[in-house]
Image (cartoon, rainbow, N blue to C red):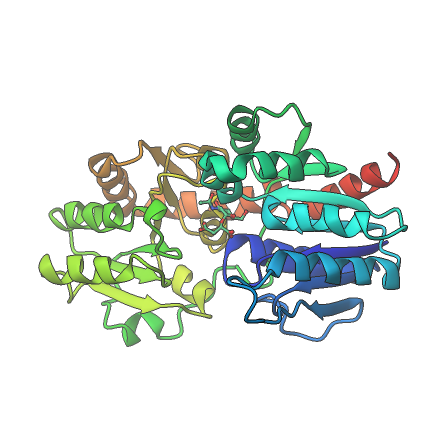
Length: 373
Ligand code: GMT
């Protein structure tokens, strides 16, 4: 098939999934055309069957805001016509599904539109009355719609009052990147003694991630045992977290790494991974940790309970309940055989329930369904 893919190219789960999906589709013999404002993170290698088309937005004095959505629609229409695309798969309803609709209207070629909902397009923007009608429009005019968890489907129907059928397709990880790496001195280079366990959080440090709960949980765990905290990533809340760490006098035990390329290596020296968000449609970082053999503790927000098998690969705690999160973390960290068993089960569950090839095949089935309409 000839498949167009549009996503936000910056670091973020949706961009990662779009890029990994595109690479896997190309490996399976499809032609994949990325249409985005820049090359998606993770698409930096040359690969047969992958093409990149950059959307350029010109700025004119007449525009207070440069019209990215229109430039995107124009570029999509060009590529649909030029490449005779069978399917245009857009990640995020706004503006991508709406730009795709406009692009299809601009061409005579019968391209099908597949939209994948990733989360904040519904759980945050869906509450905005100035956007909810256009999000619903983008969804309803798509030929097929998928979402990354059943909870996101429930929320989409509830928030947008749409009856559009939405297919759940879970996220996956690239197991050639995320697997347990041997520690070749990384723990030591961070100044962490080999027998001291490590708690880890990875995110884009937005408010919804509730990173202050992660630090609060760490403080509670530290009252019981020697432990370290790795905070990986960057974002608007990082300065707040830095000052919390300073004020609490935690600097010797908390390692703030910023954005990292070697996430799999850092996860591999971790003993438990925390994601305590208030909103989270899936939580791809949980899967990345699980693939590296790390037990996970997540909040009961959104799709997180669909990712964690309670008591098997980790634990789910109520949003904001740092006491429960600390209790679960202490339970894992003080039971080496449990920590080991959970880590092994996490790797197995990731390979089965979130199997990359099976999920790529699910997307191809969705494309075929759209084309057979
Ligand atoms: O979590 C973010 O802030 C980034 C956002 C994105 O666009 O990548 O993540 C969303 O999509 C990911 C991939 O499907 C999911 O794993 C995240 O749970 C989801 N984020 C939220 O729902 C807050």
